[in-house]
Image (cartoon, rainbow, N blue to C red; front, side, top):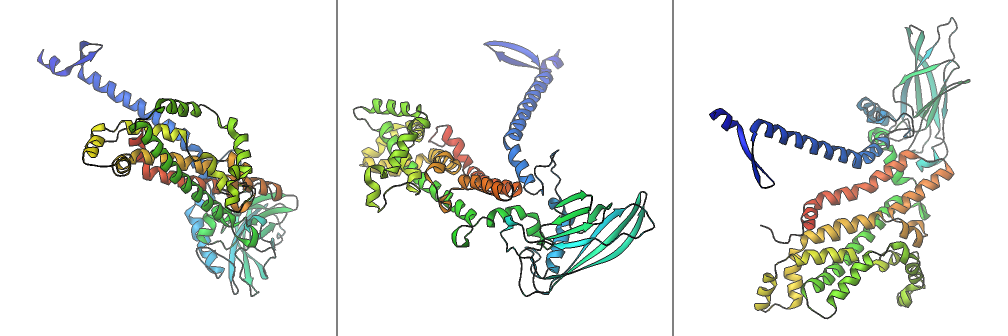
Length: 466
């Protein structure tokens, strides 16, 4: 009887006490935790799975291949060593590669042939002009090519013959890339190479192997899509536009954060801590405006920006605010949702703190700046930094309407332009597009990681730390 009492516990449910087995209760708790954590893991996979797949696919030579595969040659360490050695042989850099005067590269390629009494012809080597999306100069470098037959290894269904392709730089100019194609004779089958080719295609005339860069260096090989996204598209004067799009997005997001934080905290302080006629009606109006979709005010906002915000543009020497950064934040100087959230947070701060400050002679402005604002750090971080930054960074429709000059694009508009531009010129370069997408997500992840503690505190609406 005593053992039974030791193994049972009292559980209260709906006001009644029940005696249950302790081991059963422990197993029940463990099962519930397993179910909850499993659901959370599935949710995380569902949310960040596309981003992870985009990151892995950005290292692939053919991200659209089916069935999809996460195994990319660029992520295989032995290929890193090969890219390092080829970068050194190219005479420029083991990290970033290149093709410099005096460089001499040896690349081994192996083909499989059906067994026969005749000796197969040597593969043909063709130097290519750098691909358009590389952003490099178009002429092919002055390079001497030599093909030497190497080891012959018998296999069950034929012979595997290795060839040493030796490239020697004979010019005086340094090139960032060395594109090349090796064409095996008809009936040949590609087996392996020192550095895996970007594409392999079998035709009636032979087997075509293509490298966009034979001397990539380890960084140039692994992160070729990211380097291409960063350096390919150029504006006037040859300026890389991708970094400028990132800077533009940071500038607009920073201005939006400052403006939203200033106006939202001031309006919320007035609504939450001050008493004045019409306060409740004003707050009701703010709540009402939150229910109005942005599509309703789109045309009016566009007309106001086009006309220079009732002539304000003339004071700045402009006829209109279209195609300027002013058009991106003037129509949204005050965020009603930010005001609402800040007001709710400020109302959770005990009034005794404010009353004590007034007894000590503090003015309303001093209470706002030195007491209320420091206590609102969690809400400011959640509303002013994370949500505002995310909304500004990902905003697409409005910047696409008011901005027409490529050097003033924000990053989402630039990526959209990136996609359509290369789709019309060379076909969509999906590796570069995915790399640009991954780069665009990184700032949001970093901001959220840095401010996640304040984000949770802000949404708990608690301004006092215990």
